[in-house]
Image (cartoon, rainbow, N blue to C red; front, top):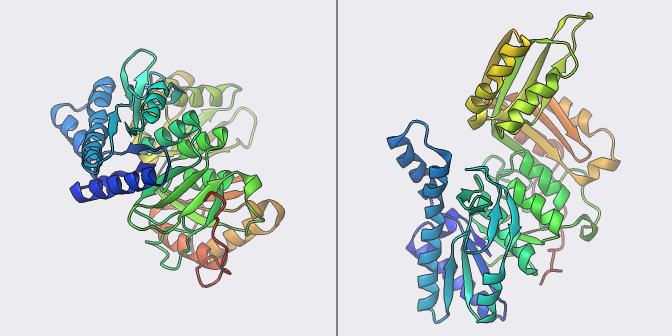
Length: 414
């Protein structure tokens, strides 16, 4: 069971999470719970760091940021103990979560869950601080934004849990963001492949790396609300899903920035040097477009998108390459957005791309960049046009609650 920041934001919500954990234990389950930092704690810790340093040291940031989740776990353990059960809170390192050495965005290498298993054998409820681990260099590390989801899935895989329940402030995964599309419907079941594409293209319910980990280790995820008893959305292997609709969801992101390299020499290996520099700086590149030169020996232009928060890191990584290979100029546009349609049914139905482009065209929305996979089409547009694009595409593919026949709730995990 994993509880997000809004689910443990204050004393009453921590007590509610404790009661939910105890209820699962009383039903005969062994329970490991992963907790996020309370509410805005992580943002407050980042602000505290910026008050004393304009460029905080990444190692010390990890030491600082890891405290938020530890506070949540200790408080929840106290609440569980008051309910008559024995709970033990563990840091990421105590729980055996081993990561690489990339501070502030580490990746899990191994989970040595012996201490957790021992506690479960003693009939204890185990609470693990999310978002953190210990590196192979024995330093505290954090996993990046949303890393508690990955912690929960990794622990579920390590101990062979029957399900990994992700408790959040929404009722599950929806066909679009309900704040933009009021008639968006809750999806009872989504495949790992669809959820991967949705997370990668802006759906904030589940962190991308957690879904990747779940698919690799076949961990069944149940994403549900911490405020109701209603079932949420199950994320499972494709073999467990029935034939899916043409389009499952419309997702969006307003966290896109575009970087354009103008006057790139048209020589073999240049693109490799550019993107190796970005990869070495841990900058995740999404879409890439290169305009080929019209004549031999001329220069090309190249555009790509990165998360808005990574623009400065990307520029710093690119500066030596730009100077070395003779790129004429680097331009930035920090106000881009992305809208995507995702659906496993797209594989066997032609015409989806045409419908997407025609729908956006009718709304007067110019498509700046396009990226596709077998089950996703993504379009980069101006940031202020994202909301209009999401509404139009959701309506065009008739995804609203009133337009789709009722589906039977997925009960196989019960």
